[in-house]
Amino acid sequence: MKSLTRYAAMAAWLLVASAITGCESGRERPPGVAVRVLHAAPARGTLNFLREQRNEMQLDYRQASGVFVWDSDEYDFNVQAIDANGATATLLGGFTQELVPDRQYFFAITEAAGQFRPIIVEKAPFTGTSAEIVAVHAAPSIGPVSVYIEPDGVVPSAVAPLGTIAFGEIIEPATREPGTYRVSLTEAGNPANVLMTSALVTLDQRQSYTFAILDPADDSIPDVAVAFVGPDPTLLFDQSTESTLTVINAAADGLPRDVFVDDDFSAPVLAAIPPLIRSEQIEVAAGSRKLSVTPAGNTGTVEAETTQTLARSRHNLALIGGDPGELKVEFSLDERRRITDHARIMFLNGATQYEYLEYFLVPPGTDVSNLSSTIILDAPSIGSRLAFPPGDYDLVVREYEGNVLAGPVPVSLAGSGIYSILTTNGAVAGTVDLVYFEDFVD
Image (tube, rainbow, N blue to C red; front, top):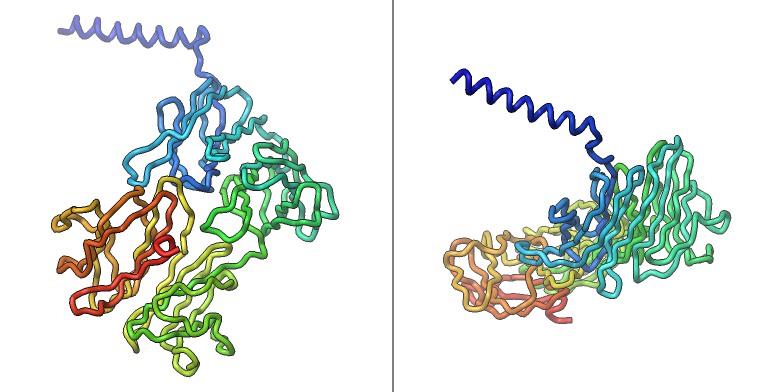
């Protein structure tokens, strides 16, 4: 046994020596190349980004990856859209790219007229002591723009642009001294027509930044946004854009309500909101805001209050619910982005007669007795918007682990559709009523 062990050890040593000799004779690992990827296709949900057959990352819209370092080589890259059921993926398209040593790459994944369109930025690694900036136009619905990155107070008409680009084009790397700047976009060659000016952004020394112009999406207010991709990626909107607020009055007594902001009771921001409708959309200053609810025309009785942070450049939704004397205001971002081949539905619960409701959205004829529910909500509350494949479904609502209160009700959902269903106390004991919004009625 000792002799066999000695021979085995010798053989292993020879293999290691051979590997070392191979490395010393030139078989070294190729240089690493840095790559970042941005999801810039607003009509798509979560994407898989694959290098060869390996799924390297998942990205949501406007999300940029961290820095990947891959061996210099030629690769096939593919992009898959994750289907609404979350279990399968569909190939959107692919491209081949050689990653060259001493270069860096930025891939913006877009679509133009429904066709897969990657935009590839290739540049040398930045070695300067200032800050490097690169701009890419990744918004097919937006025409050519001129790009300005200037200190606060410098307006586009006072300086030359960094460059002017159309969809798919790139402004070659430029530099700025470390400091704070605003990003402005204007109509190409017309500095008087400013499309957006961002809040202040900080450029640090020895850092490289990519500014990617993005298409608008229904979940945001402005017509244009910019992905600011640096060590900590963020999203830039026009600094003058505030927030919007929509209110649904689901108070159990069915009476109209007024809504006030920040204790300013001189006039409601929304007056006499009827029951069970989506109010008009109003602009409200972004930031921490206090909402107060009173009976219509009666500022002396505050029935409910809440303080919430309204996200700049985003839609916000408030639900008034509860029994008289116990009203509450629930709050949510109103996520309206339409996604190809996804139907997106949100459930809201205003049915105060029950502690919790279970919602089932299932294929027609499904017995839900032993199924897990799609979502469970107390009252009042707003559920997150859920994705389903387009098609026909049955909706069943039941008391938590109890009796069926509504359904099965046929529901048809279309691709790119946006839907909401509100449950309220039923006109008949032991039931709930359903109120339909958005694409159900529009």
